Amino acid sequence: IAATDLIKASLEKAQRLNKYNAFVTITNNEAKKQSEESVSRYDTKKPRSQLDGIPVAIKDNFCTCGIRTTCGSEMLRNFTPTYNSTVYERLRNSGAVLIGKTNLDQFAMGSGTVDSIFGPTKNHWGFTEEQFHISGGSSGGSAVAVATGMCFAAIGSDTGGSTRNPASYCGLVGLKPTYGLVSRHGLIPLVNSMDVPGILTRYVDDCVSVLNTVAGFDPKDSTSLTKPYKSIKLPSANKLSIKNLKVGIPDEYHCEHLNSEILQTWNEIATFLHENGATVKPVSMPHTEYSIVCYSILNQCEVASNMARYDGVEFGFRAKENSSTEKLFATSRSLGFNEVVRNRILTGNYFLLTRNYDKYFNKALKVRRLILQDFDNVWEQVQVLLTPTTLTTAPLYKDFAQKTNREQCALQDYCTQPANMAGIPAVTIPVKLSSNGMPISLQLMGRNLSEPMLLAVAKFIE
Ligand code: GLN
Image 1 (cartoon, rainbow, N blue to C red):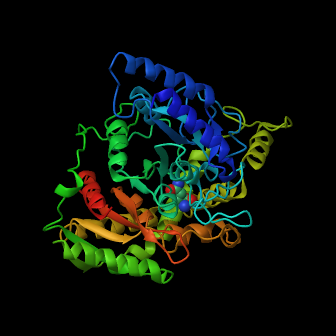
Image 2 (image 1 turned 120 degrees about the horizontal axis):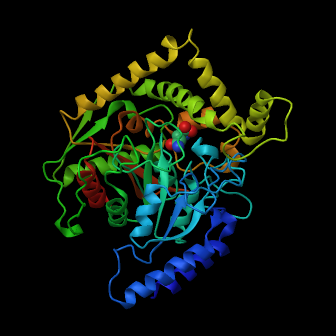
Image 3 (image 1 turned 30 degrees about the vertical axis):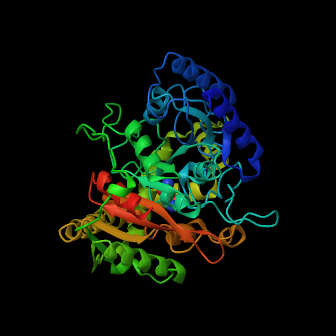
């Protein structure tokens, strides 16, 4: 199949299935142009890479030159960047074809893709005309685009679980790479010390192809790892082995709201690994329970600082208000941000007040250190941790939307955000369907830069 036909089919599918609301923008012209270029390369028998001519989608918080980048917000509704994020640049250079920018919670603050000015993204699993399950978030648009076959792979971002959560709810492989392995340049920041671009695909091997394309040092990101990236090549399925692999099952992830079918699946896979030669043992990570509150303090402090750039003058939305500069700033932000964003800015600034700084921000940094130490201690005993990704399968939108953003995140991110606090890699893999037909997924975590091992174990389970 020629790239032009493939891209045409992808674009048609994206348009035909717009009831799921996966895309903010479908990049028709750009995609057609790129696919024609790709075909001309094939004619000379020199495809640029495995991804040449392959359709991909990118979350709408990654800058794409000449293509609007909204962050699902009023503030950036009409913002068109003048440069490319490194992730997009690298995909483009490999010949991958962008078919669109995907929906997200406003500025990636959320766990459901329910808080976008473009409306919620709907999960195709269990979808009926009457009701739908959330896609998970905040990279829900990316997940639905891949899960429904509109594209081969999609890029999400992951600050507390935003790639893994929707991947898990939509039955996909979702990778949060080691912090710094994939450049953040051009990813509109949420929490700079935790953000990473994430990858959503159907299969582990596909995820590896994309990781090999986007990973590696980038001088444009000061936190980018300088160690040269070595392309990952996984053994074929029949050559994979987990003999002597040490797997930890953290006690503290057996938490209150964990659904019984997910617990059962978790036990089944632990047994499966054991039966195939791995040593599986319980481990303890005593600071896990503080992770949510610590995360929310650090998140809001960094948000308070990051959002200061949106003043109605330099970027995006400007209110019609000219009585004073202060009022211009305030009105632009009031009208440009939703309640979740405004809340986080206010709370973050409160935590950062001189009189509160030690009590909240500094304290949270210390707790973050303890959470990191939990992981370091565990790596002396095991190589990989097996946990649930989410505590339940995808909730129905009508139930989820009744909770506040804070309640939503506290429950959704319990198992995913510790990896962001520690900067370590984590991957979610679909395992089976629940009794009501929704995907159940599990998460693997490993020490920094253990992606080759982690993805091999993921492929073994797959
Ligand atoms: N749910 C978390 C939050 O709202 C994580 C979001 C993310 O990973 N982008 O902050």
